[in-house]
Length: 460
Ligand code: PLP
Image (cartoon, rainbow, N blue to C red; front, side, top):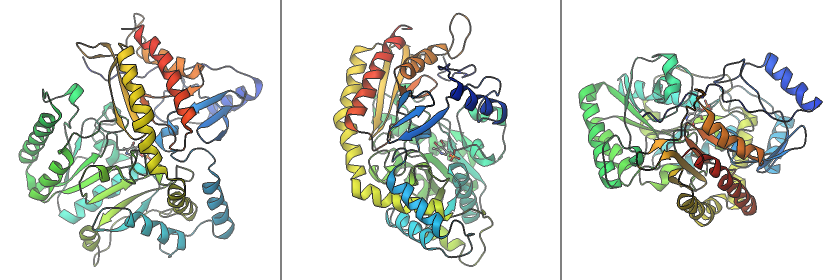
């Protein structure tokens, strides 16, 4: 059975006072929402936030275990980020990209200094999808080839090329907007396409499959392979030992550009500046967004290797954006580097992940039959919920009334009622709190999830 579900009707209801109702009504009447049937939305009006918490207009408090869309790495209203934006706005609020600007240059320098050996420059974008879009365009011009290989279990954004690179079902209704994209299967031992018994076997078979795909497609037609370093939305899939170095070796063998999409996992989510730094691999292009400034001002970018940078030394790069390297965004990006260092963010992510989260999830797996597998790293984890551990049938989607999302809605509803905003996708309850979350809040949130898993067990 497929582990993909249709989230139609995934609506929650909330308490409603006058203030709350007014904000929601304006929104429902006039705001067109992402990924939603406009007649079915019921958004929670949010009045204010601080750190890992936010409040609705009735004063109800939520612990944010989703970091919004896994972007709020430094939490709501971090004083250092707010101050950097205010100061920059008071001095120079905007300047178009063909001018040189101090914070833009400073941020590019800091990103390059914290990147792979041979990283040379940064192209700034407005977010993650366009970063992937431009990375692919660079790889195509660099190699003179057209095809790009991407994995089925992936999300790369929703602009034309990015949604075609995306492998999960959100691409289906968009058709093929970029005809050069070919999908392949990556490693995911719990639901392995390769019938592997060990992580090493999973790696070996996934790499053999990738090499065969390259050969079937024609190595000299393939510009790039794009991978999320740790697959995010589609299950927090940590690459098994040797997989990423193996992909690198195939890229070297066939002259293919290796693009790592670090939009969700870059800037500390896994306890490294960039997640690939934990996997002994050197990419050619790295895309980032979200955590670079916690999304306070839209910002993304592509880190570019010396070789690819040099391709455009004497011929113009055919692309650009009005807001590339926006000063308000870059000022908050520079502040992000300072705050990470001052507050020891990377160390605390590794510590909290290993000492607090991993052991607690192991307990959940013992106690709750619905937890088929837990996996993750740093402050990024996923509970793969099932209705049967033997068959690994996902906790899905269909109840007797044919309501596709009912079981997962019941689980997320239990979290929300208890004051925790969860991050769920298909049958997975994912854990991605702000990296600044207090240890006691992390424990409190895990307690709420523990109780919500009783609801999941009810479907077992
Ligand atoms: N790549 C990954 C791995 C993502 O998780 C996302 C968004 O969630 C994107 C790209 C797209 O980023 P954006 O929504 O900023 O365009």
